[in-house]
Length: 519
Image (cartoon, rainbow, N blue to C red; front, side, top):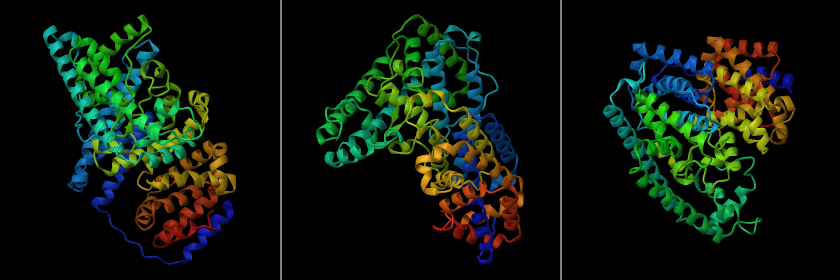
């Protein structure tokens, strides 16, 4: 299969094609859109973070490039880049907050992951600070004032998120319950492979549907009960937010950190100097967690869903049984946290909360690429053990992907790229769905190697950047996927031809990815 594809691709350079070359502001926007999205989706990889910091610092020091980013999208990207830069330093400092109890560590991890998505939040405007405000240097009056401001800000964000969620489910309840019952019955069949992430499919997490008598089918009455359950949970959370405002200051702040990680993350990014305050609150919670078994519970629909979007913060892994309410089974949410694995939000009804930019959609796609490695396996033990070989392979791809971000095909192309690499190793595209996991780590490593080779040759990278303007995302993805599995000498030959005949590359990519050629 490798030899046939290489020969076919090389032969396609006989075709002619018209290429356009232009370095424009849109090309620059596309590059930084991809870099920001790729970094936000791989914030746990130090090499990716280091590469982003260097790239963004270089951008800020280049007046010519900054002049090309004067459009509204360009300015939004600059703010998102600044937010992302601030978040990388905040996360490093948060990791240094000394905690001992597993529950407290899980809350800290949830807060850290929730910050990732806030990079793209239109309401966030982060600034870098060298040092946090040390509470011990302030008077008690100033410390109390800081805490009151923190509670006020977190509550405001939590209420806004709740209002968005209530509005979404109020509108969703107007849909035909019979149609929804049919859709949910079909969707339930693939729940272990593809956990519900957004929209009305989240109803599959309700007790009304999980604990219904007839497990074979979901009926209209089940759907109606599910909506009633959601509304009840949202009302409970609304009451909770009203109540927590009048509790003891330290107690209410601790509770808000646990139950509303997305709101707390937004506060922290907007107020990076308050990190020491947050650390102190977490440490106080740490002591509480060590001394009592029953802890505050987060309300699923109010604290972990914004609009119609599940906030996957890692809650569920370890602390799930304690923090999550009974609405969502801890085991199921563990699957979502590992399988959806988004360091923040997933596209859906709540997307309006975030900047309506290309980076947000790209962030989702980049997150899903790595997430799918753990979503395809329904075993909860597999999630807990998290295959180290596979994880290492994805870390290599994360690093390589940043270097080649300008040609990484976002959209459907990302999944196609991975599938094509797996198909090469299996010898058949049709076998990927059932057997892809067997060769996944090897395929991902091959992609990483290939992308590194491409990014190290500036001429090849430049030609492919121009070529991607004339091919669609899936065609580019399939080309990169199959290219990655070629023996190094054959891949070298293809890259050489790309440099020699740049005008013919788009047509060659298109024709080499047609049915019957690559598949």
